[in-house]
Image 1: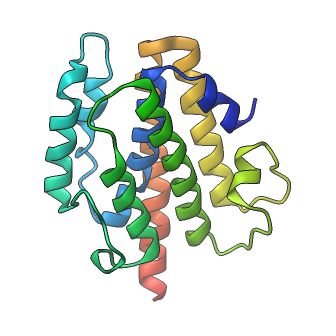
Image 2: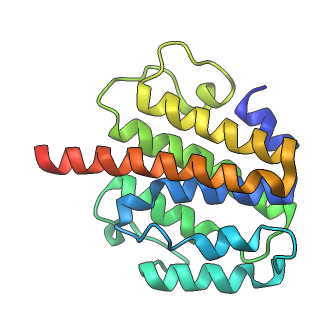
Length: 188
């Protein structure tokens, strides 16, 4: 099943986790602490108060200095700007319709970020990748696409029981992106 189909079929929790996972993997571009998004992850477990989602987002935004509207001059580069926009666009209310729009936008943004950081050229669009066309994908983009699919599959198959594994998948992706960012900084 393609990433687009998985997002279309996901429930509210799966969508929120999908968007959050994309954001979590990309926070190294903002120099954020690895634990910064943990309260949002914890909010997704059974018994988590969906009503506190917005307040938790506000805390993360304040910590990173991300306002509701993010202009190009607010970010150090285009990839970091995409990450700031992902955070700024997160819905204050954790409902399926709003989470679906956010998860979809985060998916595109995260793939774009990985595409920008991957030295290999990619002739196909991000949309075609999300729809399932994976031939000749650059390795960093391919790995991000696999992680996005895995997170949605875990939550579809296991519900809240898949959250821990989804977080592990995001942590792995964050480490990879942090290494790429570090390597680029050394060669700049």
